[in-house]
Length: 567
Image 1 (spheres, one colour):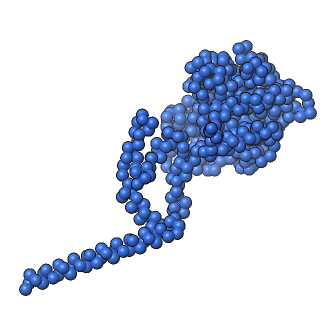
Image 2 (cartoon, one colour; image 1 turned 90 degrees about the vertical axis):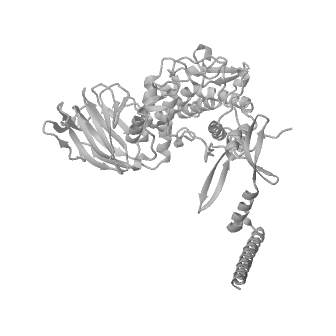
């Protein structure tokens, strides 16, 4: 009897399990049926179940690529799924998973370049192209901003660093453009010798006085300390938002001005020393040194302290950090040795100071024939000889003309205008004679960014040169008959004739080496292709010839995956 009861209980439990399984199966079938009725995206439960079933029915399959190599893929019935990591590398397609309101989606794009459509006709007195979006000084190939010249020092092609005219001009044009597009900077006056006086702390063996300086024509703070480390004149501050420091500074030998930055989140202190030395930059642990020259004269010093700190870190191979401006504060300014300061300010930006630093460098560094030589060896293509140090670039000439024209417009100083006009000379000198002019089929001139022999016909550098010519023509007076205007018109004729040769059907060529050197084509990266598009849109605002606007639109379409038709 007891055995019979056990058997009966087991049967009841088994029937209950079967009934529960049947109930679950019924719910699953109803859910799947309901999920197929209407928009699946609005029924996340059915979507999850569908995906689970798909995953269950998917099998790995080997994808054989052009008979050369294989990739692990997934097969679901008649569909084969290829990993996006392979698609990205094989087709240069870009994508990422994003989340909006907790819903994930995959964003697919054919290009990482950005196109900016001009809202009005290009004006040489306004922003330069799209350079308000440029941040030249943060580039890895910028070693630092020179403490003497106030312009970037490039490590592009030369690890020791050199003054690259194109980069310096871009630095100036970017700050000029930002000055127009950004709001007025915040400015905090620390010491001006008149209205604003701070409570500087003077050690017992140091001296500080305030007096009038006839050379500067302003009241200054004059200081003198001894050789003891503790002998200082220093100011305690707590500035947390802005990091562009400007001052009039005169230092005698073996003197320095030091800015102390402190991390607000952890115990970290960085010392930025601006010293009487010709050494460009030196860094050791938390101490970073910039030479500002040895001449005992007044100089206007404008420094972005965060950039100076980051470049010192880079010199020591320390990891680059994001948004350090939010984490640091200026805690003190220390004066050592002998000298004087005045007009000490901290601001959120000082774009025009950086712009005119570039303009002054271009005037001072210009050679007799009106050019700015590039003091670095440049290797471009196996079939073309290297450009030896001392070569000139049409892009450097064009960018410099754009800077100098704007400097003349803003200041009225004719030295800038004369320098811009002198820069035209090398544009009309053939590359084989030390200039930058090449000819296409002995008919169309081309201003060469890289004056190789045979020529390469680089597109973006040529168009930037045209913009420089247009800038100078407008600043001289649009009604004037100028050499710049003729050179611009001749260049535009060449551009319209040769532009179709740069079209790949899915992008653009960086240059025409496949014609002139007989080598493989040099296809423009998407950022350079976007530059081509932006340049053509800008030129289309100046010239109504349909080839400019039509090419710009077609090339922009390539960035969205469109292709030229086939036969």
